[in-house]
Image (cartoon, rainbow, N blue to C red; front, side, top):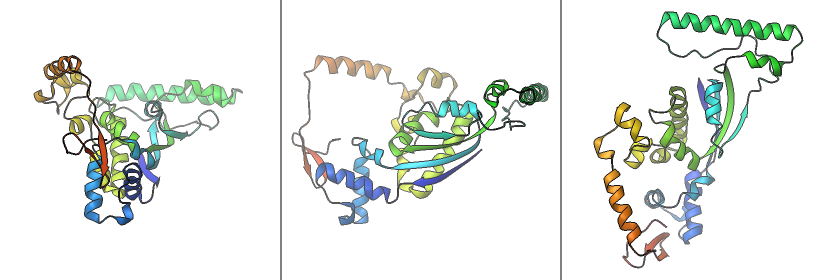
Length: 260
């Protein structure tokens, strides 16, 4: 597999800071010192996530399986353009073999692939349309795809697709995507973390407790959540009253910064 970042939003950090300035009438990025940019970006990490929709990344992802891309394109906030097996002659296509680590299983797999490729070529030779003949091809055949995600989507995806529960190929691809983003935008690293690192809890606790190396007993907050649920629904609704000051929202009740 290969993942290459081929387009991305220029001056992305300044753009993010300027979106916040629009909301809260703060300084623009051009008016900030580097220290102020860092402070305000750290503040943004704990505020509403809409500014991160403004930063885009376009990836060229090659030599990956169709099984993987079937999962990838289910992210409906992305945009995609994929190699068309309907029109392209796929005779002799590269098939990505799972890591069986067993010679007998490898042999069975190779034989099945050969049968499918032979059938594909015979169908075409006998007049079948490519779009119909492709039905016999393995779903793990290699393909190429271009994908565009914004930073907000990338952040959401990282929580689940870096998780050990995700299919290995998806984990590998997303790790490469993450590396590509951090090369050009190192400040984005805190946004591209697996759920347990980002949130301090397990995204799939039933799996994590049994199978995950990274699961920790302190991630089980079920009793704490239940305690808080009861208090929350027994308490009168509360709301903050934020006031913009210095490009950040201040809580007029406590005087401290709030996530507005």
